[in-house]
Length: 190
Image 1 (cartoon, rainbow, N blue to C red):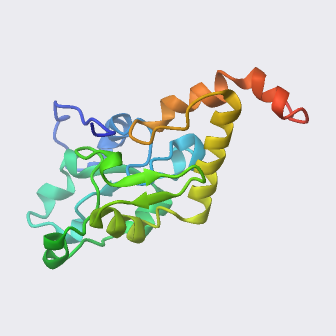
Image 2 (image 1 turned 180 degrees about the vertical axis):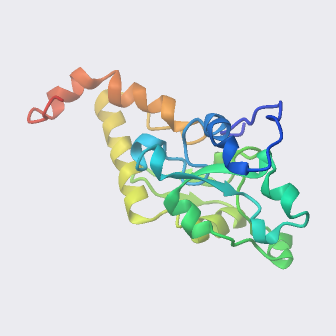
């Protein structure tokens, strides 16, 4: 099952794709479409942008694709920076190298998460996307590894990256805040 589900009813057509931001944000459950981190762990809402999944510069229909609601993906600034206008050539697509679309594809079909927080690519698409987007960059691996450690301390399963992470975080960060205090006695309560 895909991680993200796009709304079936297209919002009212706009001549400015930025007007779709709130609805795109909802569809991606406030998570990055690529590294899958939620806003709260990736710099907050101000650090998120709208990405044209198929880049504007690669569009065959130009303006139609630029303002196409379903071509807009919610992503953190860093992933958007790394992806930029890159897109695989037809030759690369033919052999399976491409960006993964978690609106139509399953995480587990492409990656295997490790306890340390790294994601092992299982497909050429995962290798391509992982390399271009640097999905195993040091801070992502560290955050994912720490989340696994916190989940273990809480007696929870590690995060399931095949589901939106925003809602899973409350189970390990908020619901267990009292038991976390036992493990971190010097923790400052805010």
